[in-house]
Image (cartoon, rainbow, N blue to C red; front, side, top):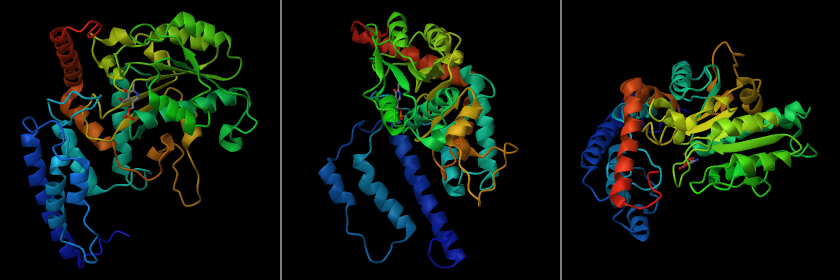
Length: 396
Ligand SMILES: Cc1ncc(COP(=O)(O)O)c(C=O)c1O
């Protein structure tokens, strides 16, 4: 299984080495030109299909040739989103330490599913998880899973919530599914991010059945309307709040929402794909007042922490709920029952990339102060841009 099918071990090692040397040169060239190259792709999709879509040869090619030709053919189709002149969507760049760690992650090729398949990956995730909880001001001891992005982090939070609210009414959703289960009410703001709706679909809760709460002009959930909507929810309930609206950056009033949700015995999930990072800054933290009162949170490391794609983080206050919702058992698995941390127990994936290495590297390289300064600098620059654009509603 671990053979590349390319001859002797010596030949394979030499090929890997020259492919990596080639990749390193090309990657460094790309990064050196990132701030000057066109931000957008310069080739059209049909042009790229032509450049990249050769017939698959009967015989293979030397690895370094493949890497060189791939880089050359893909080049005009690359977007300079990791560079300083890209302002589309909510897309992060990549910190040098995290890129270095990402290269090693590929070279090491660890399966981060089990502690047994990579003790180093498991321990690094454990350490990075504790650092993240501390930095973001979330409860120590919460469960943490490293996933592809906020989409899957939202899925994990709501999956744990679905488990917990149904368990409270005596229903085991993991064993019995949703057929005949008590109805789970879901409450979202009018400006809920689309990935929450996708998560609801994947969880069998239905995006169309979610009850919508009115929002203010910046897209913040209105607590008075949440109180009205919650009065109509009679069964197990999940409330989805947002820390950082993708259109305006606005934060839902989390303290008021937490009080209302918990008064009703509801589970509160916070989608903080980028906004949760405001928690690292003493100047910005007030936007997140009450955040620690939630039951689960989703955030991204590939946005504001600037680790390379992909890396999201799912956090659940009650680790037992997260593990119950996501763990699996098989006779061939060496499971440690908590003595060691098996990363697969906290996420929907089984085998997966060791994402903790990049998060660990970025956090160590920036330090607590560096993370806060990075977030504050981005907000300062955003405000400056808003002022210069002079568009009402921006920067407020
Ligand atoms: C508020 C919010 N939630 C979720 C997401 C989805 O994140 P990802 O693309 O990492 O899955 C985004 C992406 O911008 C977002 O802004």
